Amino acid sequence: MTYCLAIKVRDGLVCLADGRITAGTQVTSAHKVERLGVAESGPAGEMVIMTSGLRSVRDKTVAFFRRDLQRTTAKPFASMLDAVDAYCTKLREVRDEDQEVLKKSNLKFNIHTILAGKMEEDREPSCFLVYPEGNWIEIGSRTPYLSIGETSYGKPILDRALTRDTDIATALKLGYLSFDSTRISAADVGFPIDMLTYGTEEAFWREANYDYDDVVQQRQWWNKQITELAMKMPNGPWTKALIPGGKGSSRLHVVSTDEEG
Image (cartoon, rainbow, N blue to C red; front, top):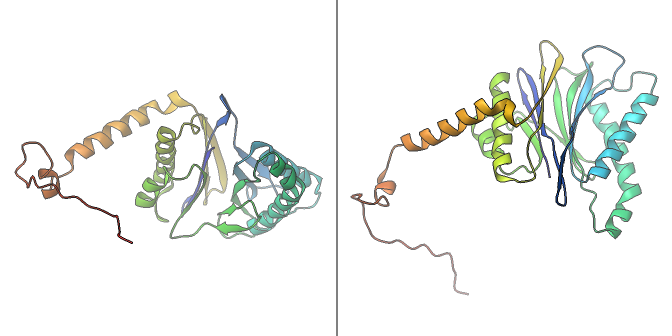
């Protein structure tokens, strides 16, 4: 499993992917984010690809897509929509080649992909989530993020705190916290992590890789703050009824969901 996240706010993009790879009892690490040049030159000609799923399927699809880009002499994509369409075509080709063979080994063609970036004709950067079947969705303003892999644990903090108007620095922190929540609860998600940002105004990708010790200060701060906030949360009638020595009712209320049929 993995955890990959793309956030789109007014200031630009934030992308994150964990680097842990598990295969049986073996744990290794590798980069799960790739930056591909898809235009002749200039800042508006590079996009990020993040994937989750069977590693062999992922490597083959991305390698074939990269090969086609290198063989193209003219500028191939004017927009991110063109790039996504070309990637989906390549994905379907690989699926048609490998799907039946994988089934014989009880494996699924399960690659999910996030593509993010900005091409010359795009008014603003965008993000797309491509499913194994080759269909896709685009990031929206009401839910300004897309995630793949082990997505359950990182959603709550993003759903509560992230909006389209969140500044990119805060979006970066929220992205890290969503990963940290996932790392704590999912054994097959962990450091190192790749983090990238794309500023809309400067039209420039920034990239860094962090390991466990690189963010120890932020991790310790967050653990302390969330514990102290829970302690400071006001007590209500529902807590007074349950705390030893409280003045609330001691009556036991049993809720049953069983239905007679």
